[in-house]
Length: 115
Image (cartoon, rainbow, N blue to C red):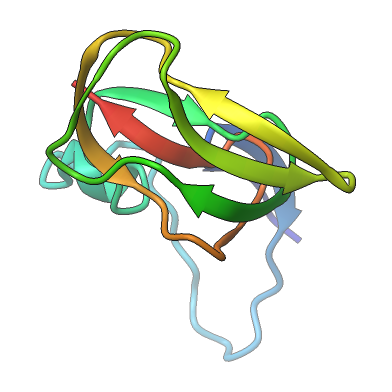
């Protein structure tokens, strides 16, 4: 079986692919130049991403798209491991994206984008 390395949200996985229909499978390692940075990051716009330090659920969101924030300002609360974690802005800027309240998130998933 052919082996491929797949990168999903910054994590690298090695996968084996089994051909089922008798047709030759092909893979290209060249990046698709027509993709935008937004599509490559799963619909999250380009900018300084604030990523989830742990897997969990978003309990509350204190900012909205277009809002100006200051470094250290609390953006949202993430419940992980039965603890409430305040996620703060790493820099001054404007919110271009923020997850919705109630969203389940994985480690490293973008919670907000600041430009």
